[in-house]
Length: 521
Image (cartoon, rainbow, N blue to C red; front, side):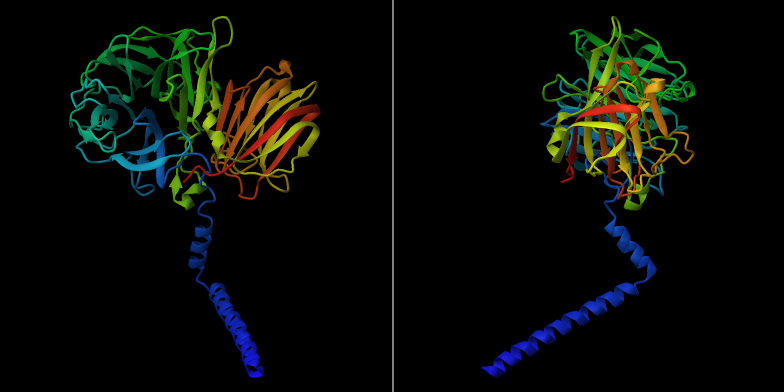
């Protein structure tokens, strides 16, 4: 019995000694790993550092322009421009993702590949479900009209692709364009809608500083009907046309386009006009456009109808800017490209004869809520750092004041308070703003660090909603009458939240912070 106890003790210590030896060997090997191997291991550990938690992002490589999603077969079908050869090769193709709730997305692979016809790679366009078989490809065929550079000189022309397997794969209808270029430098980005009153297809096309209108009965033969001319907003892209009901019950037409208003102090995002479309051309109530987003990174935006109730309209855009498309640390993670969240847009009457589009995060985002922090009321004179941290969340609050100069929030703040993103109201000068100049951000020239929009500070109150993710910030002022979207690249440990009020006391009421779990399954 004694010998058996002794043997057990010996075996125990031998086992401990063996484990210590193995651990030492592993540590020594790790210590003397080749430098490149250490780097690779570190890279593997940080693979998800900049991968968004709840924003749609490229599975790898590169994405840019979204193609308007369409709802059929119980889900939204979404295509976007994708470059599998980035950063060492050019050319885009249409890659598909599907979603039932516009929050969770399933990758469906490439549907329209590049360089498979005599013409160049497929660019931006739009697709429709041809339920009435107007094009002759069969009832329910999915038809896409896409800009491609022609084989004879690279002219921007419109080509037709069709799918008989519900949008999984597309075939080229012809190497010849269905809408040839009329000797225009810019002739691109067709957007197709069905005009139920006239029983015809309508196309809007970006033609330099003009938006062209076309009509067709079969999606193959198109006729020009009129044009809408823009001023001082550069070469336009990705036009949009839709009818929407306002909160006063009236119906209005909206014409939109991605535009560059930097030369006149306006955004470089989605410009739109409210007016009337008579079946041939569009007449704006006011020639001066409004802007759906005042940030730096909401481009190539598309709007689309809610497929379930048909009562709501949504919007999303590419969160990047052609001034700095490759300036992102996500490249080390193997991808470049993030979309904004899907927003619900509404038309609201502002004055006697003036309407405006507002934006709000869709309600489906709430299903991602992991935990919530709530503060009924916080009085701030100077600054107050919350005992809450986060890198993927929604913060919602109502702010009021009597006499202040500058009031708002510092988001993704570093422990030493040196790095942060500022969201607030500069009351003295009557504007709201988002400033990303105190954190890492894509514009190396530092020209585009603070975006701003007019704000009526005499109200002495504001509602602020901020959505934060690993590489983005989206801000909704006063129920989305003003919206900002910008790329930001905070350090991974910069997770602080500070409220500030300069020049007086402000009251932050109903401060609600919803922390989001990943939308990636």
